[in-house]
Image 1 (cartoon, rainbow, N blue to C red):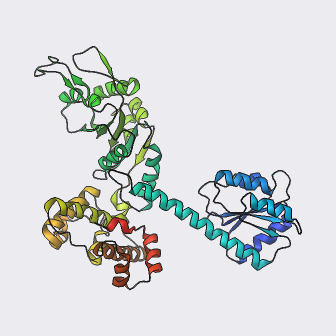
Image 2 (tube, rainbow, N blue to C red; image 1 turned 90 degrees about the vertical axis):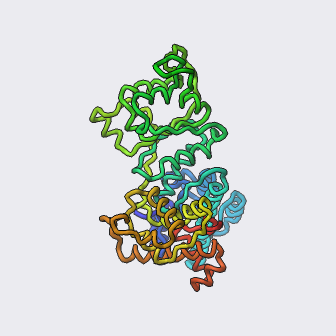
Image 3 (cartoon, rainbow, N blue to C red; image 1 turned 120 degrees about the horizontal axis):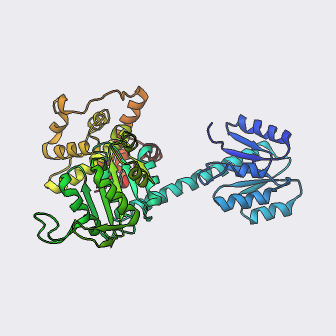
Length: 450
């Protein structure tokens, strides 16, 4: 059931019915409550509607409801219904922050006008809050996570509260989906950013060497160990250790890793001395570690120790609207690296990219962007065997039209380097229309400026 525009609180059932019918005729969705406590349980900071509340009620009266709503989120408008001539009540409500008050019996048109103005104010407050949050993200030093798709925004919203904590994090995503980039984003935007970010691919280091790589060794600990060497844990002290392809770690070593995670102490090979380490662990896997632990292929105790916070990274095929922006970003990086010009994609090229499934995910898109910078448009017309297949994720006509519109606007923003005035002229759109479409597609002009 969609969230209502208006919560109406009144202990009189007849009035609740009349007001509900009145608002419904104006296409305003309403949910009625007979008491303030029941309505307050429905409200949180993400509530996008407003509150219409009678003043005289048993239990919590209108002013008590107003105070409770303001304590939760002062930007939620509360309109108080008062009896005729109860001016002192109305004045008190306005002084305490009520959006407005309405005298009973109220006039239909006046009520609707006030409610619609209050709803506009609430929507504006939520939009400003979202823009401020985006601005904080964009102005942070270090790497940013690009993507306006709902699935990527969910990832960012899950990560942000964790950045300055010491919580270990488990990232799960397909090969090439950006686990390394997200791990670096967490580190660079955390209070550990002044210290080392240390990465090790557990699947790329021979089993005979990985223990020494992680924990270090003393001179003479084994053949060839001519001098002391500190391991990744010690090197990441006060920083972040990124364990990629965790599913590849040998079972015998998983026991030692679990002990280090529990005690935050390491012991170099060939030593009996334990060394305390202050390190945050970010582990990454492309596998279902729960299924592997159930099959005895991964230690269950280590899985549950690392699975305090798990972030599932969406594959690129599930966030295709991010493709033009990511391609533009990677093309600019490649153009700078190879001292080449990055020619913006035209709308047809951008739309074609959005029709593919990208089995290699973001890594595949990045490689294509580099080839495009080096080879030009011919990189986009490679033999079909080299191109990602469309697979079963066939889009509907409406989805394709929506994607095509987004690609047109993205390409224009890219060609005009984010200049709204030039994009308006190129696409023949009014400023408000362009901004509305950019907002709907999650496009920000700042992402297209060099």
